[in-house]
Length: 198
Ligand SMILES: C[S@@+](CC[C@H](N)C(=O)[O-])C[C@H]1O[C@@H](n2cnc3c(N)ncnc32)[C@H](O)[C@@H]1O
Image (cartoon, rainbow, N blue to C red; front, top):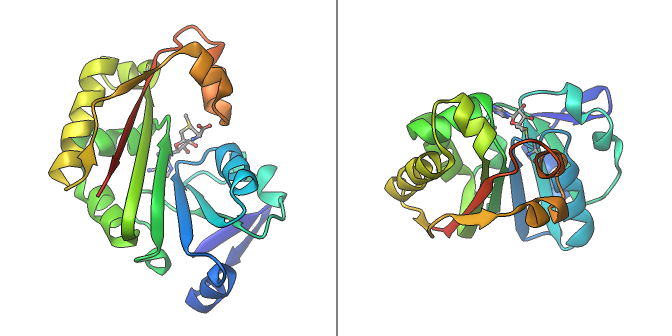
């Protein structure tokens, strides 16, 4: 799979990945990681957990992917075609403020995303999806209806997912991702959080 550090890509095979993961049994996958800030903060806050930030767009990752935390890796991949090297490894999935095809796949219950996610999971997995009103409006959904549609699709894919919980601007300001802060200070600071487990 393609990993990135600054401007440099590196192909990491299964042996290389397993060597990096050798001392970790908790692995977080941050899907649609953007500039990677949430993945970085999570890795810094939880040194016993290995964090893999995945995004299809490499440009935004150039700066933070230079970080040399032992428990952090950034991967360039599409959410609809997750690398087979990740199979069976992940214990925690976060999807923060998705837009574009990632959000569309959640809304459609796209099997490429849902089955791909299932294939990378280990046991006892936790899922967190945070959604914002503006991104859903661009796809023709209200925040409430879009969140409910995604919840239903996740439940159909066997996740146990609680009712959406509101994130107010205070929660957004304190959430460690670049997009959360942008939303908190922007025109439409409405967001919700879906959390669940398998
Ligand atoms: C609004 S940004 C949020 C970034 C970050 N999670 C945050 O909270 O700051 C949405 C991200 O989803 C990524 N994305 C959209 N479709 C994707 C896909 N199909 N596969 C992987 N990443 C995708 C975009 O490249 C973008 O970085």
